[in-house]
Picture 1 (spheres, one colour):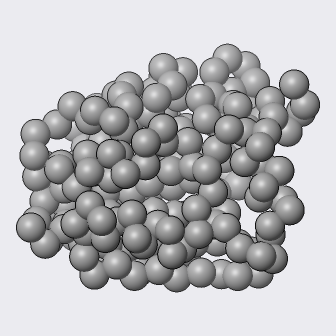
Picture 2: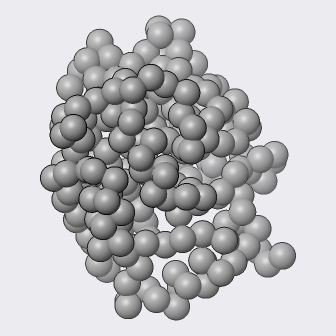
Picture 3: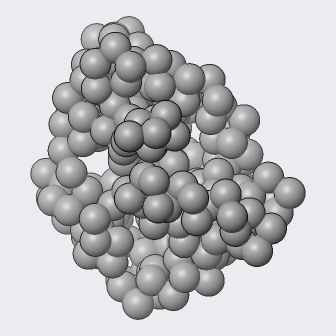
Length: 211
């Protein structure tokens, strides 16, 4: 396995000492992407929020700072990520403002219409069935709630060679903005709004649940 493939595999499910380094790099490396991605998201201080694929927990930590009387949940496929994220968010966990758990996007263990906001940052590439996963996200999102996807890669001509190499080596799916919009519309999301930074290959896609 090449070094790139190994790294991409660790991005999918970080584990062990190597995974810890990858997660720490992601916490730092995705900071500006996440700042830009969340810039247009209205977050009330009583929101209940879920970060899907929370990794090392930095985004959970940043969101918890914004919800004075709300709560932020972080979910990750990796048991090690859950452990690392708990360590980073111990203060907020002790205050009952944060909860971290292991889970998969295909079956999220919450009742219908639980969350005001659901975030997916650098993770949808790895979801095994993207359409069914979007249905599950919609199920647990409140009516009027927001789902936001933030990616540092989307399918584009400018980054075609790089992205296709990542897809091949990492067993991942890099979607175009149009593909994501069609999938979200097909499962019933509305008010879909996509922003791109073409020179960086960054994407933010926000949508609402109306019914």
